[in-house]
Amino acid sequence: MKAEKLIEMEDKYGAHNYHPLDIVIKKAEGIYVEDVAGNRYMDFLAAYSAVNQGHCHPRLLKALRRQAAKVTLTSRAFRNDQLPLFCKEISELTGYPKVLPMNSGAEAVETAIKASRKWGEKVKGIKKNKAEIIVCADNFHGRTTTIVGFCTEDQYKDGFGPFAPGFKIVPFGDAKALEAAITKNTAAFMVEPIQGEAGINVPPKGFLKKAAKLCKDNNVLFIADEIQSGLGRTGKMFAFEHEDVRPDAVIVGKALSGGFYPVSAFLSSVEVMDVFNPGDHGSTFGGNPLGMAVAREALKVLVDEKLVENSNKLGPWFMDKLQNLEFKSIKTVRGRGLFIGLVLDRPARPYCEALMAEGILCKETHENVIRFAPPLVISRKELNTALRKVKKVFKKLES
Ligand SMILES: *Cc1c(COP(=O)(O)O)cnc(C)c1O
Image (cartoon, rainbow, N blue to C red; front, side, top):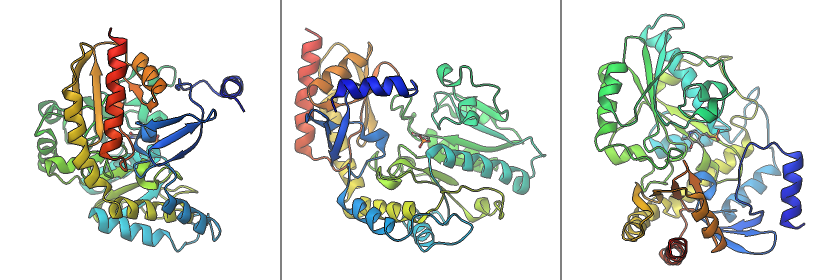
């Protein structure tokens, strides 16, 4: 079917909760996607870093097929033979002793909120219903009503109230403000080590270290939301490693399944995870054997193909090239690894549309930022090709 027809159909029958670029993708492989007319594009968004392993990775496809033919869902009323292996493997890979798998990222964030509050009450001794969680301005942790309730983006909240109490917001990167916000009722500080949706905001050097120390000194859990920044995106397995800190708990999702199937997880210490007792929390699909088999393979691909190393090697090189571009619209370039934001002094959407016409798929974030976050399987040669096209587009739009 033609793109126009499909777009019209989606418009008519679908909810209008997104404003996508008008490309209708019908298949994809590695860093490339193909639209219904047969045009090929380089994907520089990688489904918000959910396809770090590249689209339709053959090993993931195989794992999915193999498991789908055996058993897909047992619910946690019964056990399955994939969940224990997943928990053991991700625990050994990350060093976190306990694992609770969920499906979407937002559900894993909700799990972190529940764990923090319950730890606050049962272990720290905060009075019932008084536990507070500190988060940062410009955060993005998902779209449930609780989560949008503590975001600072008006549109994400508009019309969806009333919201859950118990959250305090401090400026991102401001350790002094964090210190001032901590009280005896603070159970946790939850933060993205690099804010993705806010436009690839890298905190000032030393912030994570200071935050970790403040949390430790005040018996507050330090929780890193690595759903987007984790699993190699920034050139380390986790973005918090850039500051050599060790959060008490980590939230992962997106690339955890390489784009095949929604799998997320909350990783923590034994002390924190042990607040959950049978019946306290759950999910019908969480920990299902199909998701677990895919996630196991997705993690193995990250390691076997050295994708973290590739991001660490090519990211700084690509960022340097972007920093050397001389166009008056470019204010700054920021990021880490292959997690890069090109900050413009004007709306980024026309640039994204022009890049698409050149065969590069990017999406503007926060009006003025173009995010470059291709699958981590990308090569230097492909980045060079992309760079040439970026130059061409900027030249054209600014002449
Ligand atoms: C995408 C994202 C989420 C939400 O994940 P969903 O799977 O969309 O629910 C949460 N936190 C961060 C940092 C994200 O980038």
